[in-house]
Image (tube, rainbow, N blue to C red):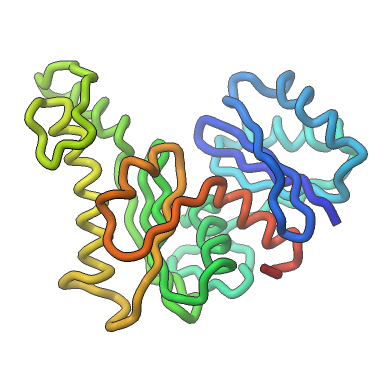
Length: 249
């Protein structure tokens, strides 16, 4: 079976076709371009896919618009995955299941399909989310922080910090304001991950944990993280591919 997978984020959409959980090339755009641009992209999948799987953290009206376009162009039902749905080999650790973003949950599903070790998933986008999962597939919880751009915008809006965009990316410490702001966000994320993987609040005893990094700003954190790290793109789509294949790896 070949499934079309659709990931609706806060500002962007992505889609890819997957056969037996193997993800094809991904493409996407911004929500403001849909549905006309989306319809153009979808037309080539009209006779190539058997099912449609969708995950959305976008506003309801945006989601509804995408679902309508998918149904019209592809003439197929749309399986919308929600955080309250059971996941293969993974149990949500949230007390209120519906509050966990489906993007975070599917990224964990994708990581779990690649590793049976304890792991951490960092998704660095508009916000930065950090989630920890033990070797049995139990999600322990995590953190949500402002992303690099959001942190900068918040500080500029609420302080007299000068608006300087030139950042010294390789600096250990900020020697100008822009670098201090950018490195503050990066080190905050790295510090949390280190503390809960190998530091004073280590979650996994003597187990080695794997870290998966995804999202558009993921590269900014790679060199700061402890242990084994994997940069994996499109983890939400990869999680959808696992579900579309019936939970197989």
